[in-house]
Image (tube, rainbow, N blue to C red; front, side, top):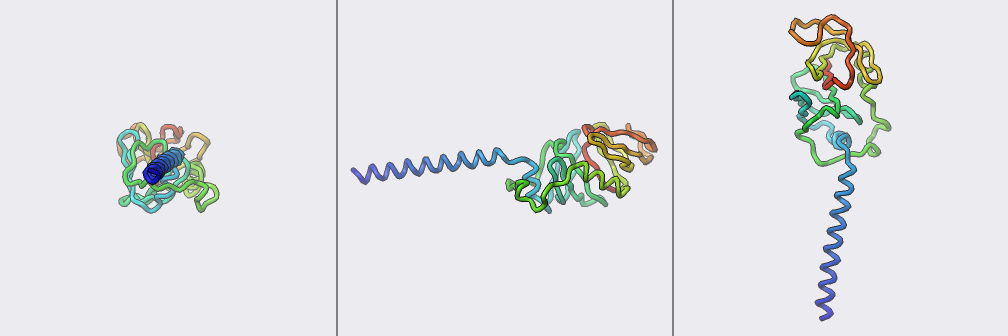
Length: 177
């Protein structure tokens, strides 16, 4: 009888430990941000589906708290994608790396990345919620970009050869050309 009670006790204790372990795993998982998962996926091929049906794919090169940089296979330069414009991600594993475990002390902000592109005077293709345009970033503000568009001969909603202001709220992707 004591052996039977002891066996039941051990079984119940085992079930409690498993339930507690599962609950701790769920609690830990609930604290993982998408940016943490991107940090752990550097050099992985990903496909990002964005607002408006736009898709960007390539190897993940870098990421910050609000952006990721992919290297598309058929493009000359990287694509900077705003994290909050991503609707669906293909190829991202469950693994995560919190910011505190990152090798870099502070991740670069989207503004810092865009200022680097502006400083280099790189030609870019800007994908927005209403279309795309080519040009050069002339200035990067807290919530908007100053852009000098380049005429491409295409019929677009965004004019070529003009200075425009692009609020970051309308931006999807910056493709360096």
